[in-house]
Amino acid sequence: MTTARDIMHAGAQCVAADQSLADAARMMRDMNVGALPICGADQKLKGIITDRDIIVRCIAEGRDPAAVKAMELAGHLHCVHADDSMDAVLHKMEQHQIRRIPVIDGDRLVGMISEADLAMGHREGQRLTDQQIVDFMDSVYMTR
Image 1: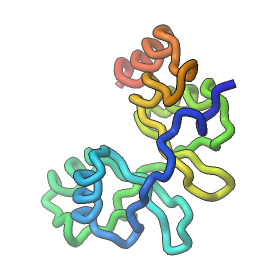
Image 2: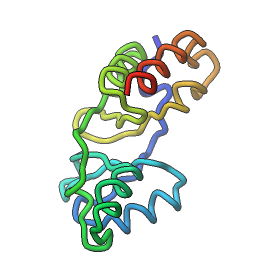
Image 3: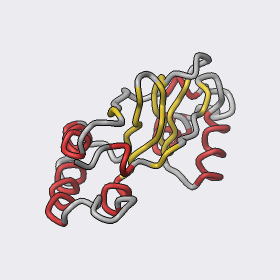
Image 4: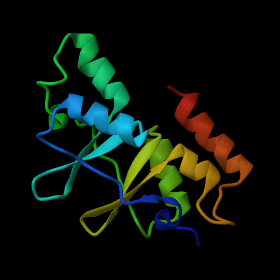
């Protein structure tokens, strides 16, 4: 059985809850990612922020990204466990119409799964079928 751990990008980097959105945007640029998990001072996962959150909920509202803290815009947190099956991962991402999801082991962040990870897999035999990819895309993109 393929699990979340099998296809995730390990070692996801967090933005600290008290860091600014400007810091988060620079981190996203430097890592070439569209979302960052938010971790508290206790190093536990507290939320997630996307590039779209920064644009729509900060910049478009005339707020200063250097003054707004990451935790202020943290979206509702959905995550999966490292040992969850791919069916469970797909179900959660489809149910909540999300394109990226943090992976935890216990209470520790161990990676992230993006839609690209779902399509490409990390090792031979861990890629989704074409039908699973189509179903995922229909669920996440077509029902918005």
